[in-house]
Amino acid sequence: MFLSSHLTLSTIIPAFIIISLFITFKWFSSTSNAPKNRPPSPRKLLVIGNLLQLGSNPHRSLQTLTKEHGPLVLIQLGSVPVLVVSSAEAAREILKTHDVIFASRPKLTIPDTLTYGSKDIAFSPYGEYWRQVRSIAVLQLLSTKRVQSFRHVREQETHVMIDIIGKSCGSVIDLGELVNSLTNNVICRVALGRTYEGVKFNDLLVRFTYLLGCFSIGNYIPWLSWVDRLSGLEARTKKVAEEFDEFLEGVLEEHISKKRMVNGDDKGQDLVDILLDVQTKNTTNFVLDRDVIKAAIMDLFAAGTDTTSTAIEWAISELIRHPRVMKKLQKEIGEIGHGKPKITENDLEKMTYLKAVLKETLRLHTPLPLLISRESTQYVKLMGYDISAGTQVIINAWAIGRDPSRWEEHENFRPERFLNSSIDYKGLNFEFIPFGAGRRGCPAIQFGIVVNELALANLVYKYDLALPEEVNQVELDMSEITGLTLHRKSPLLVVATPRLG
Image (cartoon, rainbow, N blue to C red):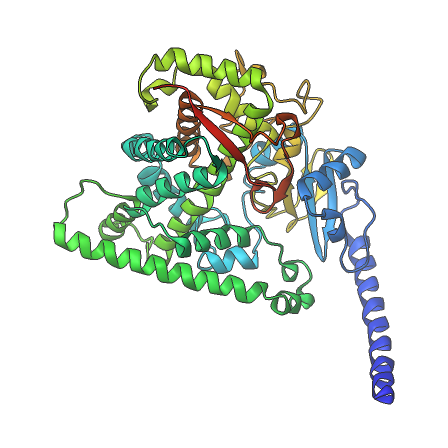
């Protein structure tokens, strides 16, 4: 046994040395051939580059790097050069001045597996296919008229949540869980026509969103892709993709059967009905096949559930920690609600402080702190630096929202900063880009924000929300856990006391 082990080591060690020398040679070769005026870079390790420096909260780790090296930092993740952007000026250059060059997406294994080969809007590469599917989404699914047509769904599901809280009789509730159920139910009814409750479906959604935020080492060090197989990441991704596909196939068949029965009646259409109509009436060369429809629906779940529910949860967390802000918000909503049993969407437009509270929440707790990675399609000169084609780009929207050069008291929760301010989240103010900007900015902002506003308004209108007696509001744990979205690390447990009869 000892001799066998010794022979094995004597074979492995020289091989490892040869491989290391080869990689070092390639690295120095690539460095010498690289553009001369590159952005500043931190020191990196051989083979893995700066991977270890990402840590468990990459948005915070990358913020630390940019504090040391500047708003544009070039790091190396395995064999892939990655440009980290952490200032409004740099974000403007990427998302506006050179938007076309940076409009594509890198090919990432996990999203590619989950979205039928990146046939969705979020992860598909920039080009004619992306333009076609985005046009369908914007015109058919996310237009102002379409968003307004689902108002009754948002209001009904919000009131269901409010009623459930009312039945808690002052006991401790997991508000995050209730808000997550609200957003899931809204998306299910809008997209699929009905709710899909139960442990199995909720577990599938949790695993789906979790995997989208997982790091696949094979994307950055291809010859180590076996690590993803060994860890089970590859198998888990394929399993979720298969389970979601089976679920969506059932949804499509259900809708096709219903469509035959109602003989083309378009009353009460959900988004699957609309996509099936577009498929049938298609007059262009673009083929809207089943996989494209399923990928579009998966995008709605990825973008419309987790990001929306976490924003509401963070908002309530901050309101509990800041009683002054809570009272001011309740005063505004109470005056506008004026004793009505519930807040409706008609009331929201007048609630300027509510909107400021949500903006401040999105600034401090950006739902997608690093947005979705981009990739340069050609060489470009950026703020005086040479950026090669094929460079991945990470925009740290979370760090930009906390930039002390742009925001006074940048770490403090102060909604008043947005009163009498033209700064908005629609992609025109680059110091505040929680939903991205440019061509790849989120097309569903309007839908997500109205869910946030309606839920938050009704929660603080109907209830006083406090922590359990054994927890001091100052001690509320605000720790984060990072995947694709920025979650609270611990559940938000509260006691709700009715404010109105």
